[in-house]
Length: 510
Image: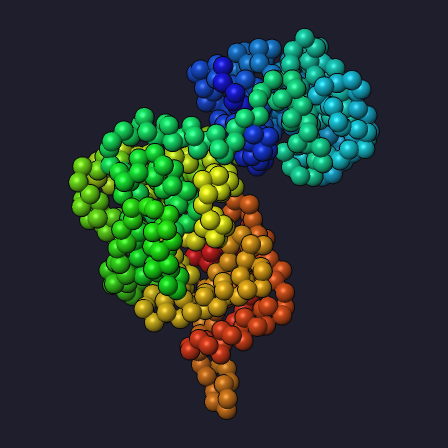
């Protein structure tokens, strides 16, 4: 039996957060759709049922077969999971008199329970449900209540089965991490030994066994994911790893040279390919966002294929794909929806390349990728780098793309990003960039009237890019940045700051 936790996803918006909280306890967890239970459950030592937008009272309520889990493994139902365990095991669930959503406080906590060790009356929890448990399941014992929810937590006598109608995975539940630790460590007996160092050691051994003396090609982007993937492979196979960094002509100012230089200092076997003219020629006159993406992706495939053929007897293609890109989630309608996204630099490579895929980061979240990189001694300026879109400035230039527009946006972007670093703001922002808008506006410089471009600055805070809020940058910083851009970048006479959040807006403008 392995030291793993299985999380069954019923479509909750918080499911990935459950996995992250479990992993913060140095315990490995995996997410699976409720309707795709693993055939072999022996490697899982505990199971967690997620919440769901569905109601257990609905005709199409998610209804997995838990006969090999309930009563046989430690089991925790969260929100829908708790209601499911009650509704289908002799209890009853009914609509709440009022929708129970938001902060609440425990008004009753049963003493002497290992599950609630360290939680006291008054502890804040986060509710998010419109149904509530009226009667506990057969053998159910009430463990905690709030003023509005009588059965906020319960256990089933004679089993290590627990249910809670609040969300321990969100920060608003102040003792949520402690409760998960009580369940996983004190009750399920899991060891807290899943650390970045342990991941590196295990993964390097697995890569050695998987690849042997074969040659591997990796498309580097300069970003965190591909860089950490490269270092893991380098540790495992050394010079058998062949990295290719393509300049698509849409990178940030001086990025091609600086990224190649940083990789040189890391000891990686990297070849830089300047294909900027090839990309810009292919993009000439095209202004449709989706067509621009497809052109950039198509040219990349051709360039990458040309270079891959120069590596004799290459057998593997390495990708920096991370766990959120691969998780099969459940849609709000209850059906499975595969949300699997290929790494933006090498996704969708044609079959004729005949390369096997290796993805050393495929089970890690972004924050875990950074911790793994740090455990290998990678420098902060690489691990702390903001995400940058695969199509680069190509989707930050609205409308058609020309070399002149790229040069303008590179200068604007450099002033903005360098300013964030000088003012100590860069590490407080998840992602930042500038957009060149297809708008000319009137301005005055000296005594002359100008009719030049408008640029929009964008800075957001987020954890995974799924949702994001705009960052309230200091007015003094925005004023200085705006003045620097207008005074130093020929062709720009107006700067605006984007204060829209995601959703409803997206981080990028295209």
